[in-house]
Image 1 (cartoon, rainbow, N blue to C red):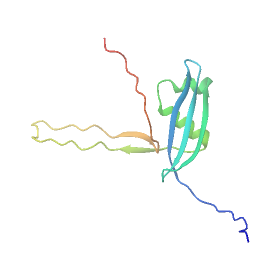
Image 2: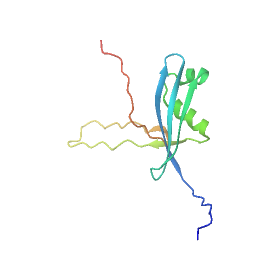
Image 3: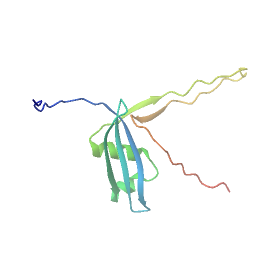
Image 4: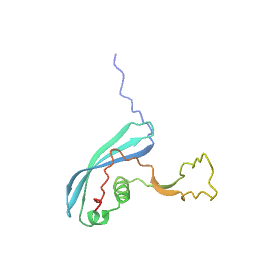
Length: 123
């Protein structure tokens, strides 16, 4: 005897977009490798997206644009999240008050793996 096929529907919660630039033609276009990850860490989907024309020009120097662009292309919505800085621990309290930076608002949920940092040379 053989089991008759049964359709099983599951629900996954997407929490992470991993985005890597895998090809770059300066001043022209880029190819992005995009992995969609669930809350349990499962790879739900992977694909490559081309970024060209006005979309490439809009990227400029703001990598957050890539997350917005990719989320939009895949039909996802990013939601802002407030990141609270770690508390400042002082062994001997100074006489002046300690100033703690304001929280930073970033798009969530996203995770950057293997980030690349570019810095200007110190002259």
